[in-house]
Length: 159
Image (cartoon, rainbow, N blue to C red; front, side, top):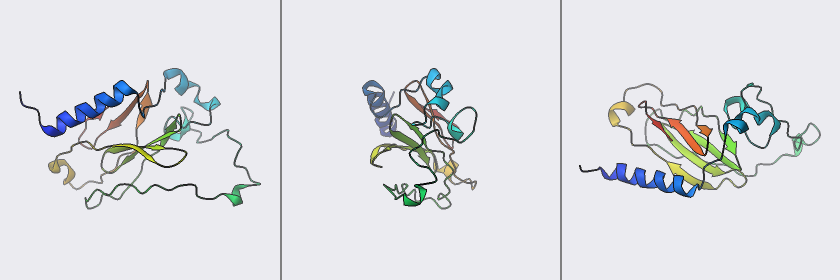
């Protein structure tokens, strides 16, 4: 059986990342259930299962909020697709790594302290799917047990 180069490359990349553990959060069920107690991470949509969108961190408060400055900014990767500029992702943060999706279904991991890109995954999606005409939006990733999960525009799940 002959493998397409893109599938072989993807398999090698994902295998190397899984074996090395590089860039993947060690997020367990216990950490997800206890995330309200740990404000340093943002492990799920709305911050936790209670969907409070609240962080108990106290470093930023009403007395110093007017002194905040931009520490870093990240420019999302261009896709070359018309109508692909819509972004509705919820970035997740675990162990100082920020995970976000970019249109149409790619995943980026950033160092949350510096904004430096750690890795960028772009799944191969057929042009037939990309040109259907609906918005190319991905709402984000999920983290669990050292894996980053993303559902793609063409209804596949990558981990």
